[in-house]
Image (cartoon, rainbow, N blue to C red; front, side):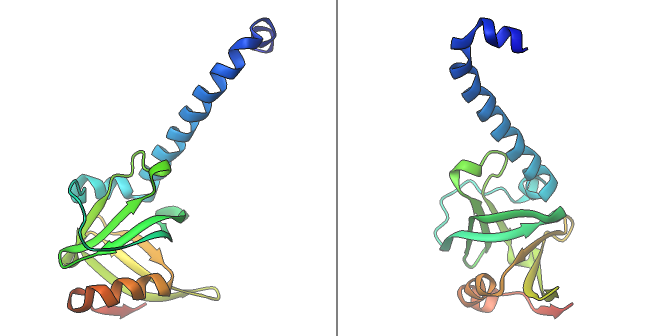
Amino acid sequence: MQTWIDQHPSALPVLFPIFFVGLWLFVCAIIGTISGWSTLADRFRFTGDFAGQRWWMQSGMMRFLCNYNNCLILGCDDTGLYLGILFLFRFMHPPLLIPWDQISVSRRKILFFDYVRFELGREERVPLWLRPYSAERIKNAAVIHWPVETIG
């Protein structure tokens, strides 16, 4: 490989961006699959324009400690919980709208930190861990639709 690069030095500026974009898309696809996002998308993919209240650049964690730090878009309305992701990370992460009757909520403490655990999908049971301040925003906007919380 090194010999080829030495013989074709002008190819590196062309190949590196292609390699970088390919790697970026590969990592996004792996995270989307491992985290459970793609499992949820099979059933809860949202294709319209979300009209409810939204909060950009939120953080959360899903299955197998897949962190979405400052790249989540959270929202809610009468129909359910909206999950989106910022454009740069959207590959294999379509927007989701999960109905309220498909969500359960519990509060938990992990080490020294408080979290609110959303279990998304009655059949899929994909966890979404949010910090309490993010969950409170959703709870205040959801009002009567907020699921009954359990302690766990």
